[in-house]
Amino acid sequence: MLELPIDSSRPIAINQTDWRQQLSLFDLQRSTTHPPPVVPVERQWPMDTNHLISIKERIQKSALTAPPNPWKKIGSFAVGSLRSIGFDKKSELLLVISSSGRGVINCQTAEKVARDYEENFDDEIFLETEGIGPLAGVVIRVAGIYGGGLPRFTRDGWSIENVTLDWAIQDVLLLAPSSILTGEKYGKPFGFYKLFRDFEPITAGFSYTGKTLVIAVSSGIEVWGR
Image (cartoon, rainbow, N blue to C red):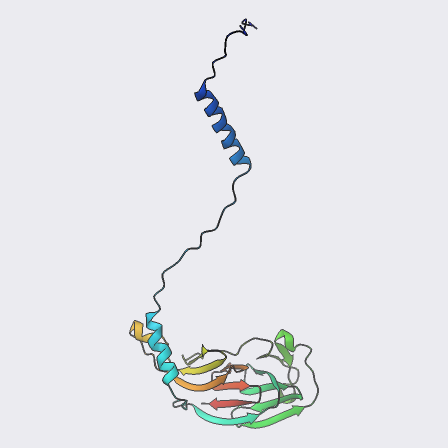
């Protein structure tokens, strides 16, 4: 290796360009190994909700009304401290669970066909329980204070909508086949029948056959059939 003599009496010239380049390389290396924190940027997606204004106004101004044919009122059933309800999948038998036991209602005849007073709530939190009477040995899926839900649609197109415009008041609307709440915007039927307006119901929906419609609150059940 060839060593060149250095004259210490003469000042050493520093190449400013090289110094800046070396510093830039150091900064680049440091930014690679320790990148700055990424600050998330919230994106604002424009959403046109003007068509919802007229829907809200129609719902708020609508009075409670009976459902159209072929639906008819089957009955009203008082139930103290109702907890959950659930339909048999093959019939119109409705299992009702309250704080004082279980019962079974035949929603075609409005008859109470079974009753017990056992507080059998072990499986209720998992949204199912065993039936009694004509439903003995049958596991019934239930909906109520622990969640879950009854079918909201029938095979031939009837549906219900649970709408909350003024919490905690809720409206339950029945829509005929092919109708949707936003139908006016898309040139489709948009009519509805307001069946319920009160504090949030425990559950509402159809039987699996689509022949029965129920709305349940903590004090009882309203039943319609066809």
